[in-house]
Image 1 (tube, rainbow, N blue to C red):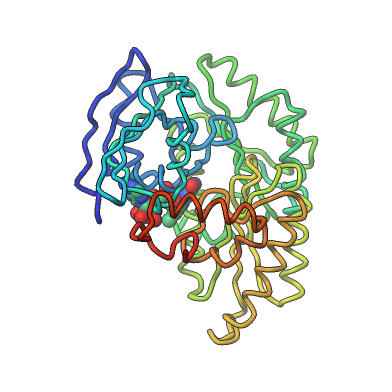
Image 2 (cartoon, helix red, strand yellow):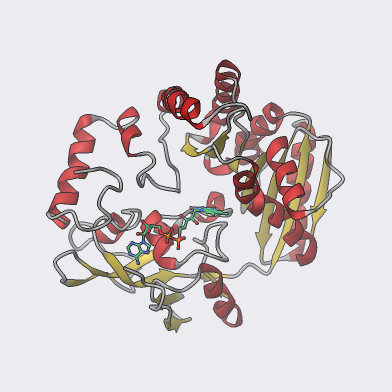
Length: 377
Ligand SMILES: Cc1cc2nc3c(=O)[nH]c(=O)nc-3n(C[C@H](O)[C@H](O)[C@H](O)COP(=O)(O)OP(=O)(O)OC[C@H]3O[C@@H](n4cnc5c(N)ncnc54)[C@H](O)[C@@H]3O)c2cc1C
């Protein structure tokens, strides 16, 4: 089933600050259409130029701004869904509050197309901040950079709109991929931090505060991008890390773990130790402010596929055990799909898994909706 041609913006309702769209609208196009209204949709992911609202809803996508604005689910107020038996059901509506029965809207969000097909989406909008500035803070090591993350959130007195982390490997791979060179090739890791707001002076004060804070936390250099061109240059590097990694090696496993944000330094350090133990590389990047680390497990060049497939499950078991030990989960935003279904038991109890299966069977007794995704049934 393709929903690509369901690509209309059905209604922009500026007074209620809501928009009704079909699932085939590209996430980025939404915000282009909203510009004249001074509104924006905040739930978009980093893949905004290529992904669709339907996919965002199905995956409960999170973006670079989730640390301040939250993920897709916060903005989905209503859905039209085609159920596996062909029934069309309206869920929720243009309502800020609604506790009339179970919250099926939020059950559908993140269900990975396993319960029904979304054919219409009502999204909450926000006033578009007028000013934004981005800080690129360079640290000597990943440890220093990730250690600063929870403290920036709790101690700087500013709520950043984004708090992204890239280690040296990710940053260099993206620069090479883009043929880009920034004067920071020698740093060990970096944080890309955005602040936004409606008053220029406030935004300036905020980035000053965060800059000073990062300096005290060990940042060796800080660059400020306070115009669109410079900002876009920095964000393009961050957005290109996954594609740059994908080109680097055929054998890889892209992980998407999520832990309480304060646990990021400990988890990143343990991943480093696991990498040493198995002789692989595990470069990390991601939405550090959300506790969401993307770790790219990459074997040495001389491993063949047979060896990789034999050893990868052991590495994943160890990685996920660390994640579980701090109350984390194996996917923060990319979902379970086929790839992670055998590992859900690493972090979820048998009772919880059984509840999930019961829900799937209630919606889709014949298992025709994305069969094999999330679980086999
Ligand atoms: C470079 C890059 C960067 C990324 N950055 C992020 C990021 O920052 N945050 C993030 O969360 N993800 C990110 N992703 C992952 C991905 O882009 C997101 O999960 C996105 O939300 C998927 O949207 P899509 O349109 O590509 O969906 P698809 O990949 O086409 O579909 C995803 C799933 O949703 C189901 N689905 C699609 N449409 C519907 C529908 N209408 N009804 C029911 N089910 C449906 C499909 O069957 C499939 O199972 C990134 C990916 C790449 C390649």
